[in-house]
Length: 352
Image 1 (cartoon, rainbow, N blue to C red):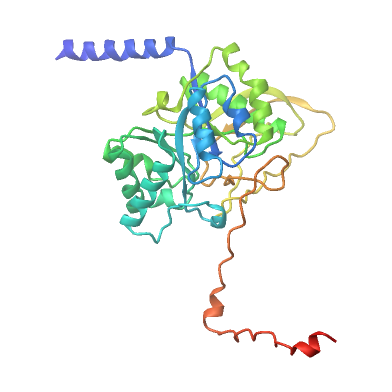
Image 2 (cartoon, rainbow, N blue to C red):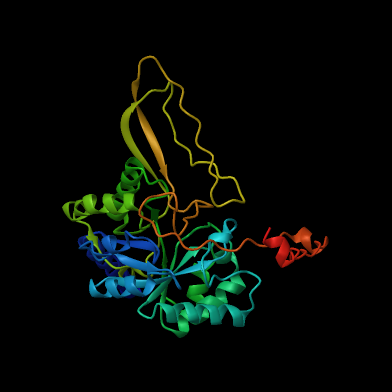
């Protein structure tokens, strides 16, 4: 018995040493492919980025072919019902009222529209990925087609991990969103967090979007990963690895406060996908003093801002046709009078 225990300890030690000897790895998934004019530029970046294509998009087939030509791994970016903003889900979305047959038919059709996809991740889905029964129907199809599933983690209530384990589907959840805020400073902060998580845990997954700002930032900063000994890999290389947990990162810096400052996680107001309350500003001191600042890194908040598939107000974007506006419920109870046709005037009156 003691010999067996010793062998187990030695094997665990060997695996730990071997894992530490491998270079850190990151996967960067680019969601929402199929709408934007910048899609080809981001696909052509000379790195093994993973391309998540939305179904039934104007440029989906063309971008999928381009991604294949450039050796990119391809996923289906499947629209799923969110807590809010569902009028911008896109075609073929999975919604809570749908039956099992409707859900699985819709998912098969979406996968057939992106036949090169070897995995799936959710577009929006802050509501749908928290529904055990509906996600069970989804993962049945994923297992049947021998795909993997990446949880975009748009809610802390996601049941994806438990359901994929039940069906034996390889899965993983993302660690960082790169471009909630598309300013260079915010992109840089998120990219640095990705680097830090990869170094601490040996691996990390980020999700970004084909915004012009994200493309310009990645083009300039992706070489930093190799400089720091980090390897970019497809998403499938990091399956069945746990997402990096929230952790405290201590750093010594000058902070203009009376007492050592502790940054707390930002408060989140349910039930919206987009509203986040900013942290209170620190109290300024006349003479800044060096203190120990502890920043809380929280890769998986309870509710994460939703990412639209397009932003019409930005230049260089293809905007899909506007979706029809649903008729208000109150109209069902108050019938509107039928429109009367315009009167037809006699020909002599028309010629006057």
